[in-house]
Amino acid sequence: MALSSNIRLYRKKAGLTQTQLANELEISLATLRRWECGETTPTGAKISELANRLGVEPVDLVANDPNENKNKEKVNTGMLVFENGGTRVELPPTDKGYELFNKLVDELVQKRS
Image 1 (cartoon, helix red, strand yellow):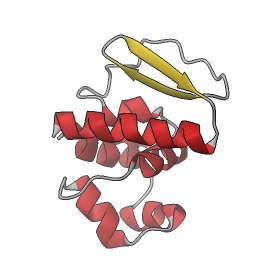
Image 2 (cartoon, one colour):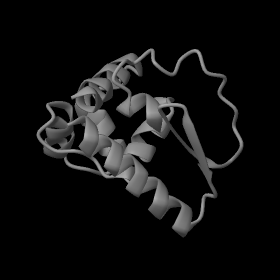
Image 3 (tube, helix red, strand yellow):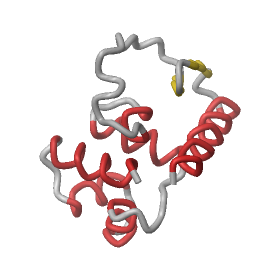
Image 4 (cartoon, one colour):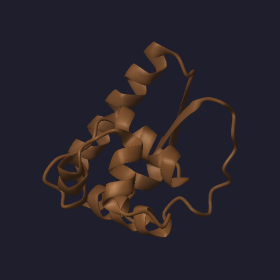
């Protein structure tokens, strides 16, 4: 599954150990290890938090190819942005926006697993 290997890849690129990242995300080391080996999947909110901490977009974490989204211009609009297969959805950073964003990411992760 791409998500697990991308979490590991971007964590290493950020120069973080599993322990450091787990502490920063306020999750257990065991949880992070399960994410990185693909046993479990983080929620959309945690994917967003992971991406923010690792300096990537959430779509980069769930992309099949880590370079898949690198050529796209990244624009900081203050919105939650979900891109998949040429479809782009921008949601406001509100409770409802996060709820829908999490749902979209969760559905994408389930399709790819």
